[in-house]
Image 1: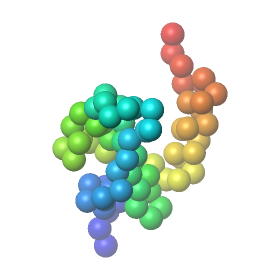
Image 2: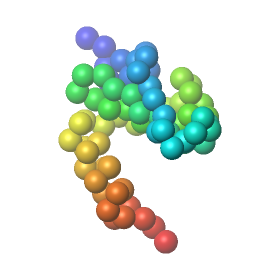
Image 3: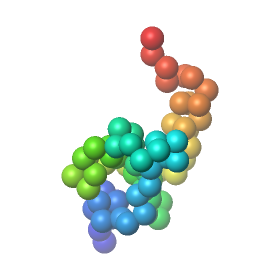
Length: 72
């Protein structure tokens, strides 16, 4: 059985946010069953991948949208 990181590295469903307008200064999101990955678009396939469970990723997005992760 391959690890989630290995599966994410070979995933073909990486996508950028629609608001990035084709720029390469953002993150990409990819997924495999049970795991969501985040990587830097500047490095593409060579980028390190942060892997989250679906629950942890949802919590991250909720926290980011609420401003709880804003550091000033």
